[in-house]
Image: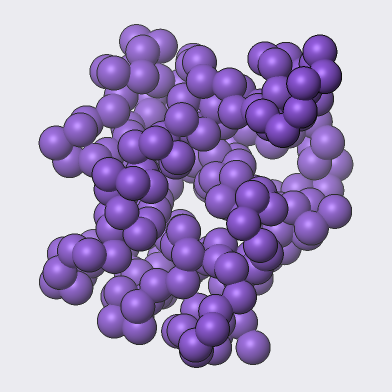
Length: 199
């Protein structure tokens, strides 16, 4: 139900808060996939806000680390051929591909260049380009703030709460195109820009 509220909201800024392994990042990546592709899941088809379907769009994902978060966690959640399932028990169907306890990657194969992830993904630029013209670029919080300036983006996702300066730059990039800012984070021990904005 919480994920459904994220998908149906037309708010310009959303903070998805929860504990570890509560599907915060997955929910926001699923929302990004909808906006990048204009493909709405059957469960949302009747209710999904049409105003959010305007692909091709430019999206940005900012995470804590390119090596510890982007490569092992985020990219597999997007790759159509990767199964992301629960690995919590020894029951026959728990976490196995096709079970109700997981999903295949969010970006459909037919929207990749030549149907091939390696042709759509640029490791050098950390950019995913779809054949419909949508582009998703990946950054990390340890980059210089100047790396985040310039250009406009329709969708900005933060995986965990961003530093104030990076939050401000990402938000500024969305203003001229009426973009949206999403943050997935565990409730912070200290104040953060995204948490403050949510309240």
